[in-house]
Amino acid sequence: MLIGQASHGLEAQRKLVEAMLDRRMDGLLLIAPFGRNEELEELGRAIPVVVLGRHGPAESFDTVASDDIAGSALIVEHLASLGHRRISFMGSTLSDNEPSMPQTVRALGYDLAMEHSGLGEWIDHIPGLWGSAGGVEAGKLIVQRPSSTRPTALHGGADVAALGAYTSLLEAGISVPEDISMVGYDNITVSGLPPIGLTTVDQSGVQMGRNAAELLISRIEGRSEAQHILVPPKLIVRKTTAAPPGE
Image 1 (cartoon, rainbow, N blue to C red):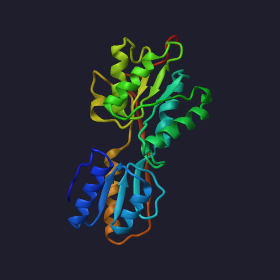
Image 2 (spheres, rainbow, N blue to C red):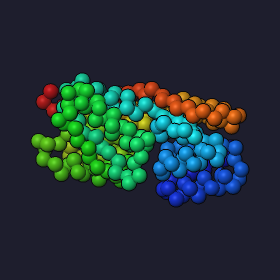
Image 3 (cartoon, helix red, strand yellow):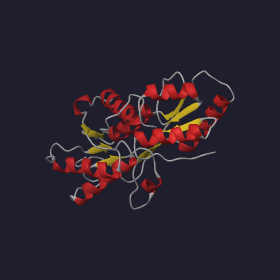
């Protein structure tokens, strides 16, 4: 087993994949890879490939992902049940947001859930990048809005971005959840720390990893038909969600 980290963008990822191919690996498990689906299809025709975190369909590789449509619906339904109407989504403005990538699917899930809940007029995408710094900047955009037009709740897209926005709100004197409720996504370890207590969506990462490994082994053993697995997410309610002000 060879583990490599390509956290610095598409070019670093390509070099790492090439290095693994040079080492004659039997198969590749790619976790939320950058790039277009066409590149992944080409790679899948050359070597067994399973992609974790991105959605299907695909012809030459398998996928395992959290059901991000359902995850966003869990968030919107939870916030709407508390009485929220002005629920905003913190999107990712990466230039290569492929339809299969989680940031795209979660945004679609948010839109669909808002429409389904009768809140279509309140659909609001706050631009940013899914990282701590991007979350901080998105939080500043919220702070700059007049209090009458600010969201009363935020679907943070990802925990790291939600925590960045959380920081900006607190620094501006906006309380969470008294003024704005906040929900992340991914259930990273820090989100559960008692001083934070971020409400979030758990992707069942261990199950996803097990499914991906099993698919890769069966690919290496000769299976050629693509398989696509969606793992049901779970809403983890903690301290950052409450009824909107005045409710």
